[in-house]
Image (cartoon, rainbow, N blue to C red):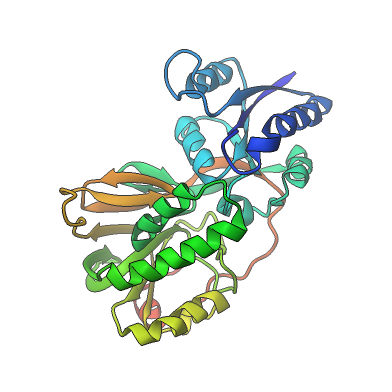
Length: 330
């Protein structure tokens, strides 16, 4: 009988109320398909006897070749770090706030439906982004967004009706106080210097679609997407935000966007924080020493997902992007 592991984060979103029940249902569905699964609680310490990572290593050594994760993007990233380079496929049952990877894999955001889909899913291989040796599956963020993430963590568990108004208020306050900083980018054989408050480095470029959570056109294109807002007058910000939400940001002159397989970022650390820079990888904060060296590990991770729906590639509509992009692989 085949073996699998179910890792459930009981602190992640719906995991607080239904994590154990969802884990049990998934195990039953897998058993009917000839797969025996053991459950591991993610909130146990990651190292040492009995920790989730030690127990995961033991299960993989015993022959498990599938790992199902009940949690958010941060939980998925932590497990990815434990299995990267092994012959293991990951399945995601979304229980987090944004669930960006599940969205891009076309996995239903309802956990019950996700379990039904994953029971019959196929194996796909996707790229893994990496910065200074630290992996990310969705996006790595710098600047203003890392401060907003601290506010999000402080409000964890309050629900979207209370969470989003709090984040909007916090963002407005930060826009008044958070300065633009000089950033140097080395990409596609060129060195670019600009001033920005925040930058997003996506593991494969985004599609220009309306919505709060942009999706990526491909997960195995071997490219990074680099995005940010240039320095400019404050009265233009409502227009910039509206274009971001409407999905027509490639036509916005304040927004820069590039594509490249490799990127080096030189950015000054925040005042009073030494030489290291705060980076947000898939929602998880870390401190890294510049320069920040980004790369893509092509098709480095196996995942379980429905058959991919056809998507149009992200067009190079921004004039700077058109001039500086490398061609996207077929």
